[in-house]
Amino acid sequence: MLICMQSTSVRIDVATHEELKRLAAELHTTVGNTVTLAVRALRQDRIGADLVTPLRPDESAWLDADLG
Image (tube, rainbow, N blue to C red; front, side, top):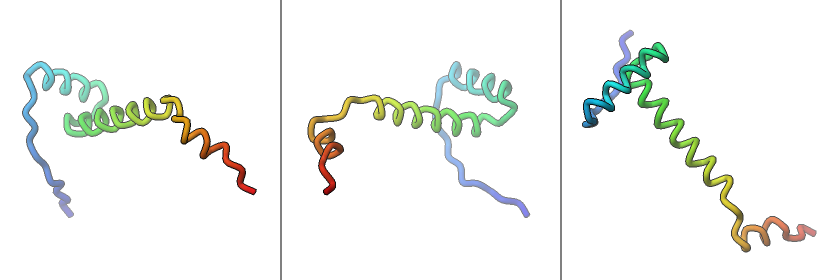
């Protein structure tokens, strides 16, 4: 059975496309999968940055609240 994924086009400059092809070759995968991996890594970086942000006073108060 042939499974077709939906696709779309994204315009990028030639240098970025060449870099994507180089990375895809290094990773032994497709350019499309390389973009998927890059988006996931960027999302993880953003989550990591959010996690190291100091808590606001109201967040600290909530975490320190007496449960009893």
